Amino acid sequence: MVIAVGMEARSFEPGTSLPDPAISGLTVSERAATHPPDGQERFSGRPRVLYVYVGVRGLPAGEELSARVERSGRTSLLGALFGDEGIVVRRSGAPRLTGDGFSGVIRFEVRSPDGGPLPAGEYTVAVYREGKGEPSAVGRFAVGP
Image (tube, rainbow, N blue to C red; front, side):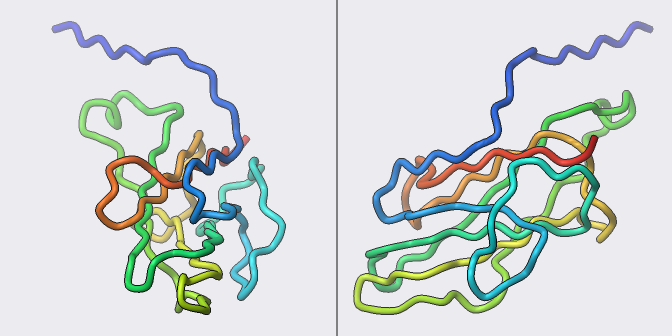
């Protein structure tokens, strides 16, 4: 029996893309804070949790944001055959929003499902506005050596 696993070679550039004018910023940090701390694009260790801060301005009242995360990187043969455990992303804390067209910060947590350290790899987090098919913000960062 022969098993072949192919990985597409592509370059990975950490950074942020903000195509939606209602999104004013996206930062990633190991610190949980009420206001976004300085973000990082590379985390040398393997933290248990990372916080994604999304700045919004003029977000229509009642409109929700959601986030999805993907990881690429080295995978064991068993992980490739049976699937890597997913990464959990969820809203963290109450959003700090003000005004009619809401402005402020929404925070998400990125964790491994078992609560252990995040796997090393290249991560892409995409933030979506309710009812939109395209991401409103995309952040790329790396975890591990």
